[in-house]
Amino acid sequence: MAAQAAVALGQAQRENDMVMALQSSRTIGKAVGLVMERFDLDDHEAFVQLVKWSEKADVRLRDLATHMVKQSNDLRHVTTATQPSDREQSPGVTLVGRPDAVDDRGLDALRERGRHGTGRLRP
Image (cartoon, rainbow, N blue to C red; front, side, top):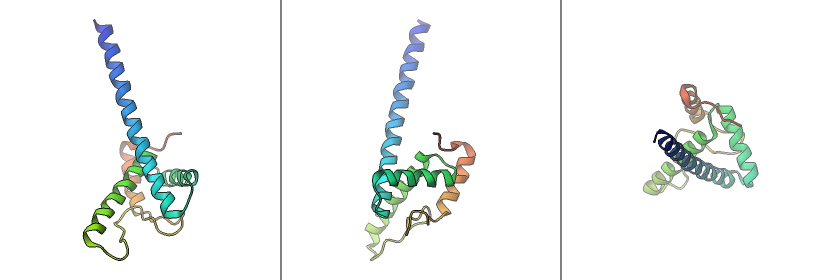
């Protein structure tokens, strides 16, 4: 009976891990799309740029991607409500100009969060 419970628990954990991996992959894909659109990069170049920002901020790629997607969603809601001529960027990872000219305010917050348990991007 204990062996069956251990097998069932292991299967449940694997299923949970797969769901989390799929969610992370989708979020990273959305962030890649944001970078592709903003900086006119192809998908590979955009992914490489995200990895660079992740390493610079010392945060996991999925955490950076989550932050960027949330910021984009928040910004979309703000601009829909106010209808400004130019989108104003909220504090955070500000995607302006070249990919190497990213505002570090949001990266600092992510970096600090990374020191408290989220860790670094793992190869």
